[in-house]
Image (cartoon, rainbow, N blue to C red; front, side):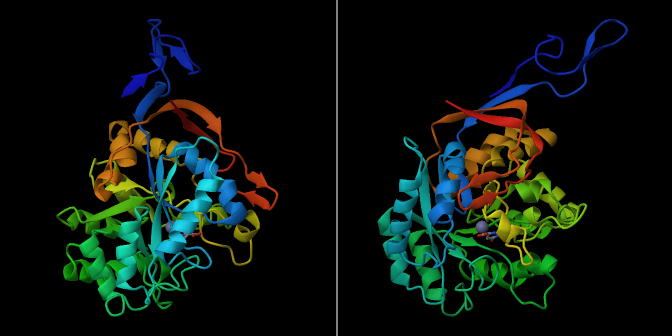
Length: 378
Ligand code: DOR
Ligand code: ZN
């Protein structure tokens, strides 16, 4: 439900108003609004472990009802038993009274046994398996090197168990330009994969290119979906170099050209059911980002809902926001939609410069900047 908080002529609110000759008040900026939607879920989240887990989990738990929790810890979460233990540590770190539900994932390796998929399904807490091509990103060194060989029996079992494969879609060949790695992955891995296993549910995670948009749109039958991050909707690759090197805008897959960003915005604001919210919120301590070899990952959990609302607002598509944040994800996973609601209000707020903890700082996306939309909860 979209509601106007103050009509342009009411004089209420903090908008700047001006008068034309006939003394009619004329709105200079958009009317303040509020928007009540079903509580969103985050279908791609890095919660980490230890101190970092305790530091970041409240941000996700206060904004989202559920989240698909990525397994790229050290060591990676490769078994159902490890996923159950990891889930317990997340539950212990949650703020008192939180109803946040972490949906666990397994980290696929060349050694994963098909039986592990049965265990995962039976556990009731593991919802998907993550494919990291070995070396593609943070803690991916134990990832897959032989998808169509060693991993094939596991993929076949996943089809039987209706267990989605969540794909970090980049080739890792160092000879391939980093900006082309997603496109080439689609051609050399994803297309052949869905041809071979058309019934495998696949989420192309954090899509970054018009090629990924076209690929996902071309897949019929509801077996292929995609998550979309705030950074790939709001930033292009210039943001990496604006006024100097910007480590807090560095993530993988790396930001792309403006034409790609525009294609992704068009896809998500079109109302297509194939695209859904996945922040890829990936906290690293400031010193690990502002370093001679900085880590990939953008910490977006505290600002993500505000940023997605900004994207849909600027595209004139606020009526499509709820499906993207709250319906398309659960529908794809075959899970119920949430019953709780949140209200987003259009009122300026300043993103903190950093969140400070005993072990160090974490710098959020858009640190220090003023955003317009703020979430409020029932
Ligand atoms: O930027 C990223 N950071 N991309 C990923 O795929 C992993 C993530 C992380 O875990 O830090
Ligand atoms: Zn990720």
